[in-house]
Amino acid sequence: MKIKKGIPLIDQHDKNGMWGGKFGGSFVPETLKKPIEDLTKLFAKLRKDKSFIGERDYYFKNYVGAPTPFIRLNNLTDHLGGAQIWAKVVSENPGTAHKVYASLVHCLIAKRAGKKYVITDTGAGMQGFNLAMAAKKFGLKCKIFMGLRDFQRQQSNVRKMKKYGAEVVTVTSGSQTLVDAVSECMRYWVANCQSAHMVVGSTVGPNIFVKICGWAASQISRELKVQLKKEFGRVPNKMKLINCVGGGSSAYGFWSEFIEYNKKQVQLIGVEAGGSKNGKLHAAPLTNNSKLGILHGAKAYCIQDSDGQISETESLSSGLDYPSVSPLHCFLKDTGRASYTSATDEDALKAYELVSRLENISPSLEPSHAFHTAISLAPKLNKDSLLIVNSCGHSRKDAEIIKSRLGYYTA
Image (tube, rainbow, N blue to C red):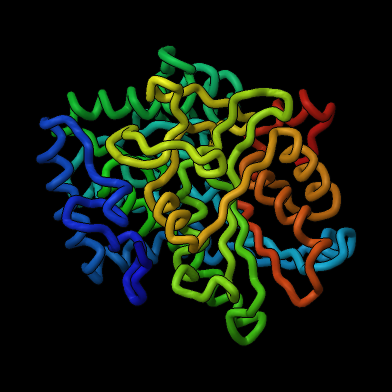
C-alpha cells in the first residue's frame, strides 16, 4: 500500500473506488447506482472544465474572501517556549468554517445538473449553515437533517440556517447526533434523487462524495503553500500540520498539497475526539484501532460493539461526534503518512481557554482539539520547528457550551 506521486490522493483509488484496495467504495442501494454514476461522470467533466474552475475560483475569492489568514501566534509561542506556533485561520470567512468550500462547489454542481434543491446533514451546524448560505446565493432550495441532540446544543447555527431559508429536519432516531442525521439524509435522497442533489459535508460516504469534498477543501492547502513560500521563501523543514479529525474534510484540505512531501520535512498529525476524561465513549476510531466496517456507503474504520454493530460515540464537539472517518484518513494511517492521536473534552476546553486568552482568535471546540496537541508538543521542540494548526471553525457556535463548562465565553 503506497502513495503515488504526482496524483491527487482523491484519485488514487482502484476501479471499485477503493483506496489501497481496502477503504472507500460505493456501498449503496440499487436505486442510487444510476444517480451516483451520473454525478461521477459530471464531476469528472466539470473538474476539467476551465469555465467551471474559473467560476469556483471567482466565488472562492469574491465570496469566501480567499486567501484566509496565515498568522504566527506570538503570545502563545512565547508563553510555551520551544516551537513556533502558527495558525491558518480558515474560520475568517463568511461561513466561519471550512465547510464553505464544499458547499459552494456542490451548489455549482447542482446548478449544472439542473437540480432545484440541495439536501445535507449537519452535526455542529456549520455544514448546514454554510450550505443554507450558498443555496440562497444560487437560488436553490435547501433541506438540512440534524440530530435532535445537536439541534438543541447548536441553536445559534439552527437560527442561521433558518435565517437563510433552509428547512431544518430534526432526527430523533438512534443517538440523535450526526450519524443519525447522515442516515436520514441518505434515506431521503434514495426517494428524491431525481430532483435533489445530496451534499456530503465531509470526505465520507460513497466514493464520489469523498472526491468532491476533498477537491473543494484542497483550497486550504493551496493557499497555505503560497503563504509559506511568501513567508519563508520555501516550504520549511521540520513542519507539523495539525488538524482535528472527525469525518476528516478539513484535515484532508489542509494536508492535500503536502502529502507528497517527505514526512521528515512535513509531518501530518490528526487529532480525534477522545470524549470525556472520565467517560467510556469516544469518537476516535483511528486512535483506538477500530475495525473495518461499512457505514453510509463506504468501508472505513468504524467504532463497533462486540457484535459488529456501530457503537454510540461521545464528544463535547458536535462536529467530531461521528463513529467512523474518511477512507482517505484510513489510507493515510495505514501507509504511515499521517499519525493520529486524540484529545479529551477537557483538553479541548483548556486549549480554547489558553488560545482565546492569549491570541486574537477564538477557535471552536473542533480545532481546539488540534490546539491541545500543538500546546503539548511545542515545549518539547526547538524554535526552528513549526507547528501549524488549522483553525477551521469559530467558537461562536459553541458559546453556550463553553459558558456552561467554563463559566464564561470570550468571542
